[in-house]
Length: 81
Image (cartoon, rainbow, N blue to C red; front, side, top):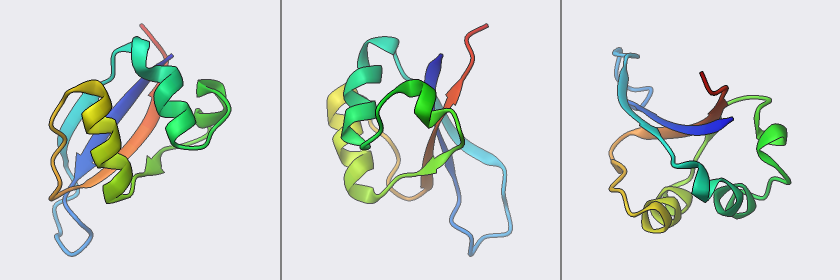
């Protein structure tokens, strides 16, 4: 299973289309799961989780990718194809 980060415009906008999507390299799964306070990727598979600005910043530093700060950012688990 892979972690996927998605971004949408905040609720004040009527546009609910996907604005950002990033599949995280599996090598970061354990660190991200621990950072978010979950026990495993399987435990996270129960839904999609809204990230705080601090969590977004920490994950961004960890994976070395810029994640937009002007969007509502979620993280979820997707089955690998």
